[in-house]
Image (cartoon, rainbow, N blue to C red):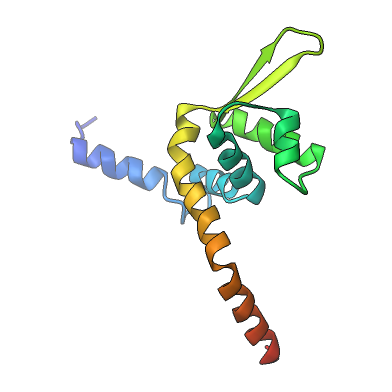
Length: 133
């Protein structure tokens, strides 16, 4: 087997994670991190570790089921860590991992952009509806 150069190995790795390819695992990750609940959980955890109930109060509209599923998925992907403290009742805290912290600036920017441009988006929607399209 011939030896490959570092440039060839990097090119192979780049092709392996090309999100435009249907079988690329990066698509699953993009699907996960583009979820609104993920964005809200990650940005809520930017303030530091929080208990499940704190997150539930902070993220209006998230059902218990959805919040649980989102936290489990983020933990599975290594973006959030769950810490259980033996007490009565048991205390469970969630915090961002270093990997989650590296993603935080990106999702926080998207959240901020959405908040800052919502009036423009609503106006565009209204104009589109008025045009009958």
